[in-house]
Image 1 (cartoon, rainbow, N blue to C red):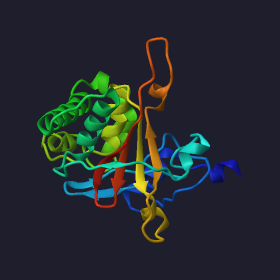
Image 2 (image 1 turned 90 degrees about the vertical axis):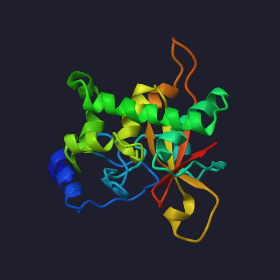
Image 3 (image 1 turned 180 degrees about the horizontal axis):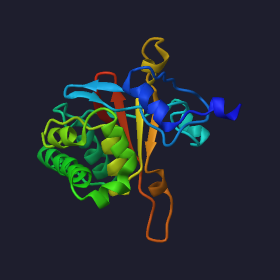
Length: 226
C-alpha cells in the first residue's frame, strides 16, 4: 500500500515535463516529495519551472498558512522585478534607502551571482542541486546560462533557491488572496513558498535575518510586501 501512495522524483518530474501534474494549495501539511516548489508559470523568455506538489509550505507553522495583511511596495517591471524586489526588501530590513539606479545595479549583481554559481564551477553548483533540477527539467543548462546573461531575464523559483542560500536570506512568496479564492477582490495575501527559513533563526554568529516577503501576481510580476 505504501508503494502505491509514494511517487518517485522521476515520476513527478515526468508529469511536470509533460504538463500532466496537478497542483493545489492546501491548508495543512500533506506528504510531499523532496523539497517544495512552485507551480509552472510562463514568462516572456519561455517557461520557467515552478512546481509544488501537495502542501506549499510543508511543515511550516499554522501562522504561515493563513491569510496575512501587508502593504504592497511596487517594483519596476523591467524583467528584473524578482531581483529588484529582493534587493528592495533586504535594504528595507536594514533600514537603508537606495535609489532606483542602485536597485537596478544590485538586482543585476544578484542575477550574475546566480549565473556564476550555476554556470561556473561544477563543484560549487552541486551545492545547489535543487535549483539545478528545477532549471534542467525545462531546458538545457547551456540554454539557461545563455538566457541569464540578459538583463531582462525573469527570475523565479530556481534563482530564489540559490539566493536564499547564498545571501543567508529567509524569503516567503505570497499570492493575492483573491487569486486563490476567486471570490472577488480581497486585501489579503496567502503564503505559497518559503526559502531559507533556517536563516531566520537565532544563531551564535548574530541576530536572525528579517524575512523578505515577495508578492507574485498572476501577471508574472513580483512586488515587495512590508
